[in-house]
Image (cartoon, rainbow, N blue to C red):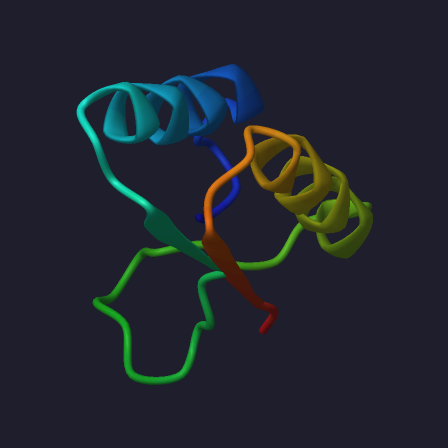
Amino acid sequence: MHPGVAAATAVEIARRARDAGATAFALQQAREIGTRDGLTARAAGWDAECAALAARVEALGFDRFTFRPA
């Protein structure tokens, strides 16, 4: 995830994956190092927003869920 991706969109992607039969899901917070020019991976409050999003995805009930913070 990077700033600019709506949390609702990310949760919907996770929900669709679960509904399609996925039992594991990983959410990774974008880092600016090693990304293409112009990608913004930092914004005010972004770390807290990602953590809250991870909690929402985890609540979907995957057998295995991994959150990889920046």
